[in-house]
Image (cartoon, rainbow, N blue to C red; front, top):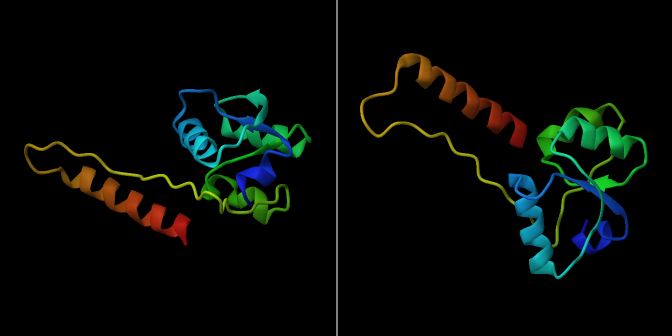
Length: 118
């Protein structure tokens, strides 16, 4: 799905300043596309609810829409022109070793992200 195809529909997006909105706005500028933003909300659950009720389309991380797609509540397609990518990092203090609890959390998060990507 291209941004040009999405632009044929009203869209539900996070408000300016939100990290996902910044990625979308950057992709829109790159593709020279303008969206008709019908609703702005930083709540992903509200974005999905508005889309389910026919108020527009939205752009979400795949992991946040996967359960809704599996349940048949939403349909989804990856963006292809341009592709939109987001990096996820785990930050840690430069000084000292991380506690075993922090290491366990980091390990769990890493497994969950890998699972979501698959």
